[in-house]
Length: 277
Length: 257
Image (tube, rainbow over the protein chains, first blue to last red):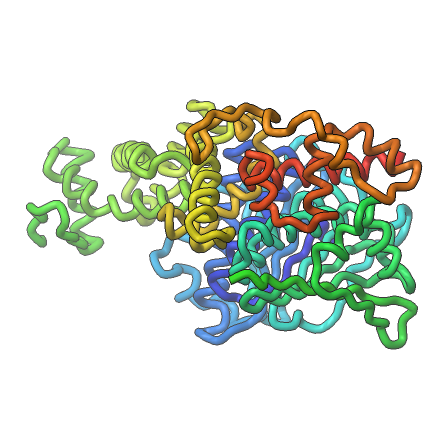
């Protein structure tokens, strides 16, 4: 089964916060209560911390989190492509992580796929709204997860439900804006841009997933949104106007449309800076 | 066996053999000294679980007490023939904390701690903006309030979720004068009307209250920052943020109809 949400990031400690904010958004979107949200967040945090601390033997590598939801299950898969799970990793620094995952999830499996790395698969109570998630792309279309190389320096988020995008994107981009030392004014602008993208981009994407990758530097946040149907970068900028001054154009510092080679598609690249010191 | 610490700060880690001996002395002989030694031995476990599970919750000390209670239950129920104590204790202690959250209504209300933090973040944002003449960043707020950055980010989002959270409540301004919701916009609201509107949008904008229309104009036409708008209108920047997000959401819904 394909996920509703996929996050790909480097296994750095600060990225666990990105995952946690994404999950909080998911929980909100699915109607989980505070205890269920806390269970979900705590268990997945343990799995991610394990990847941060142990998966690549001190080196850096990708951390992937897939989330898949339906009426009977909310499944989260935390995956790495590292050294597998030797005995030393099973008992993490204080031997509690995996026990915590076991205790807080309905079911947990620790797998070592043949092609290497480790997968922790967890299941939780799905929440009252799980079954009613609207797909983001054209209905009836075959789901396919765009598979490009590992994300640039930064994080990559793919989401297949518009409701989930609305709940997750502002939170994830807020974390990144905070990491870029943006002022609260500028963080709030980023949230407005995220709201527009989550609400409007679904009409413009080529497939079933809205793919947003982000690159963070001090006072600088770059977003790449796609893959969009050709010509839709412009209409996304315009559609986002809501009859007012165009929200995205007003709140971002640069906008570029980049054609994807060999495809009849393009991406929209946005850059936000915070010049106030 | 190692001597039991007399000073509470001192950590004594007993060997596994000694731990099972302590369990025998407590569970069979009801020796309170053995129980005390076990509590001391495994308190770091309870503390660690409270910290992991309670990140976004009540005061830590409250939660630690609940975790300790879970630890005591686990000490009573542990069957030494069935593996190591920690793997038995983890679900017991977590179960105790979950039950506490359920029973205290934490599951259905916005946790008290989170609400209080959102208000603190709102006030800190305002104070730091006044002091420095520009909006602070999230790290500066976190440092100022000695909060985790995650809590600040939660608070910056929280204004969306906590409609009941009284960000609109009357509160004193810097000059001490109390300003109530919406009071600060006079009768000349119409001058804030947005320009260059097509017919659809004009019709749609009619559904947006005057104050929100004014704020939209200040942000998107006059290009004021949210902090500047907050000062002009007499509300917090977080509330400006909430009103902008809500108004744009309303406009999106209305123009789609």
